[in-house]
Image (cartoon, rainbow, N blue to C red; front, side, top):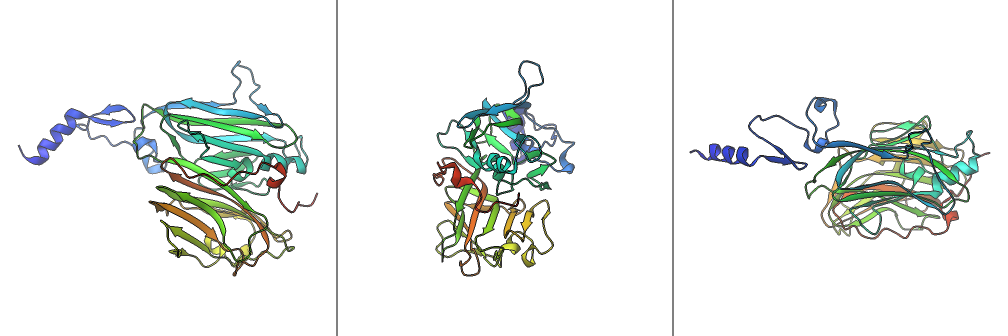
Length: 365
């Protein structure tokens, strides 16, 4: 028997396990691996797994689908034991401007309601971010925009980052503000008997420097282990009036490098804009600036490395200059999004003082 025939016979006899399901190679039917394909070209292909839904829906059958998180309280919004991949995370919340809320209350709930995600019974979260920042807009503000993995549209906040877990998932919201928050949450996921061991966990790390440090790059992410960096949302606020310099270059250090192997040409260039975002706010699938306020010297921008993810095998440090010589006096905060094999290195200590989460410059009343 020829070698190719022998391999085919063994493969057909053994079958192919996808998400714990036995599939024969005899029919040679194409499938989307783990259902991760999201393009129009693959929609007609079979999808493995079992669709599931969780969230704050009224378990009594009524229409009270919201949950209230009082000051100092923590609410579990998603918990599941088993393997799966979160496909869609949607939520909305109160207070919001013009609907049972003042601007001050809106800013507080976006910056002081903290989202944490735990995978596979880990003790420290893989996601720890103020909820407004997680969805890509900083400063406690809300701006309608649309990108491929994140969006804010007409009061809804949507996330399509795939979030795999091998044994369990648990998400919480902790209210560090002085007033109650009302939330509505939908989590759509696919359950599997098991996932391949090399499927990595989703992470989101929040950082802030207020003010930025002279002569030192701002650090967006510092991680150790094996993974890949998939993007950032960066929130920049000048502390010298409206003069916000965007001449700072990104510098990315891979696997212990002392000199960055990736170095850019300017902040707005990294976010695929140009000329100080002089045409104003915009959004695109992989990059954008949902908030660009020259009067306040304030910019909220994002860049997703979806087509150009940055892999690392030992470590990664993602930094950016604030000003051409790190001489801009500013308030910088950010969310770094990445996938990596657990365990992850400790995140920077999250502020215990709620006031340290609020923006430095308040917008006009």
